[in-house]
Amino acid sequence: MGFDYGPLEARYDAIVIGAGMAGLAAAIRLAMFDVKVVVLEKHYMPGGLNSYYHRAKRPFDVGLHAMTNYAPKGAKRMPLTKLLRQLRIPHDALQLAEQGHSEVRFPGVTLPFTNDFQVLRGAIAEAFPDQADRFDGLVAAIEAFDNLSLDREQLPARPVLAQHLSDPLLIDMLLCPLMYYGSAVEDDMEFGQFVTMFKSIFLEGFARPEGGVRTLTDLLKARLKEVGGEVRFKRGVKRILSKDGKVFGVELEKDDQVIEAPVVISTAGHHETVGLCEALPQPSPETNPVGQLSFMESIHCLDCEPKALGLDQTIVFFNDSERFHYRAAEDYADLRSGVICMPNNYRHQTPLEEGLVRITSIANFAKWAALEKPEPYGEVKERWRAAQAEVAAKLLGEFREHVVYHDTFTPTTILHFTGHQNGAIYGAPTKLTDGLTGVDGLFLAGTDQGFLGIVGAMLSGISIANARVLTAR
Ligand SMILES: Cc1cc2nc3c(=O)[nH]c(=O)nc-3n(C[C@H](O)[C@H](O)[C@H](O)COP(=O)(O)OP(=O)(O)OC[C@H]3O[C@@H](n4cnc5c(N)ncnc54)[C@H](O)[C@@H]3O)c2cc1C
Image (tube, rainbow, N blue to C red; front, side, top):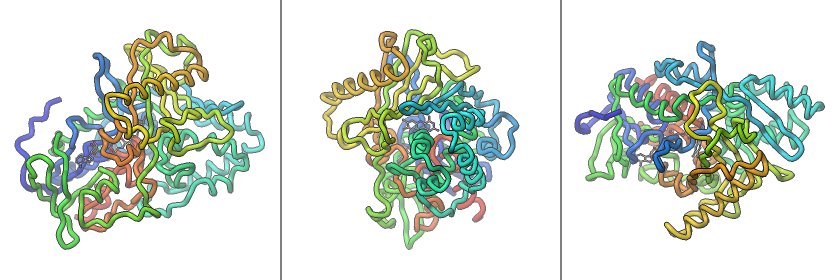
């Protein structure tokens, strides 16, 4: 899909920094209401953390395991339905294939789940009979909680969970997938975020757009163009310009070009945005530290379907130690827990060209960043990829002799593609849920506003565009 926009103009009504999911969604929303908007992206591709690339003529999604928040066509009052309605994108355009079944596996207990919540509920009643009623109480509290409020109080989730559930194993098993798919906080998560992730993973579920993440980024780019917005690649923002506490534009890395606008929405992250704007105060390291959680992931291409080898789950979240540890790894990666995704095991999709096994582990940014490239970085990466594959093979069944190609990314890759300090996959632990930065006209959306994941990031962009720009007009 080409970009035949003319030259960048000197003045817009609004600038969005970053063409990830949040930035594209925010810009579409603004352009739909005749706001003259441009998205400035430092890379040559859209998607940010959720992009795609080619290696050895194979297409790879950067991050996509699952689109959370599955909603069937026509379902009312669900986040995905609302999001598609706000952007005027038809549900059919995504061609969503639902997951088969996924699992949370801990020593001695496996909880299966699907897009039918009763499967998880039944599995909990069977494995934890004394927790069944308590679990129903927790679900009622989750359903009653307004997690989309932009000015909600931030509470840690574990104490709230302990009010409902008395078995620490069940608490850890519920937290494991939710933390892996959306917690910037070590060993806990913010309760509103817990509710968001619980709804999006367990109550709504997983799906995959036919064609992977590219289907979604192509749709967003096309929609932006259709409503009159612009996106410009290789246009990194070097500085956000403000005067007397009010934003007035940005300066680009390329030729120091200045573009003026009374509104700037940054999806670059909170700490990263502070680094771009002299007028913003440095966040306190005690109350708002830089994120520490980063991942390494290896993708194994097979000469057969994973299910031919007995790997029939869509996604497995596992932990093999007594307690679940979700904190920056001490070594290059922490293989005691992780996520294994087999994208072939979505239902009703055109069969993928190869079998795929994606294995994700928590990593240690500083250790990876200290390695020289290409070596010893390449050798260490290969060693840890092989170790990840061994763990997955022990857990789910042997697949390694069917691997015909593999590719691995580390925290330094995440830093390169997103600019997130420490390669922090979910940004900083403290979120600015209201999107307000303290500089008039400068707002935060995306990862550090607090809605995470593909659908969350798009909802964040839409919410900030609606609440901070469109309703203020
Ligand atoms: C490995 C991995 C796997 C994942 N898997 C899933 C999954 O399966 N399902 C799911 O729902 N979510 C997944 N996620 C999370 C999801 O990708 C993110 O939550 C979401 O994409 C965040 O979107 P965003 O727009 O807020 O931020 P980003 O994607 O970080 O986008 C920010 C954009 O801003 C650009 N930018 C930064 N600084 C500047 C600057 N100075 N000038 C111009 N541009 C700039 C960046 O280049 C980037 O394109 C995964 C993430 C990773 C890393």
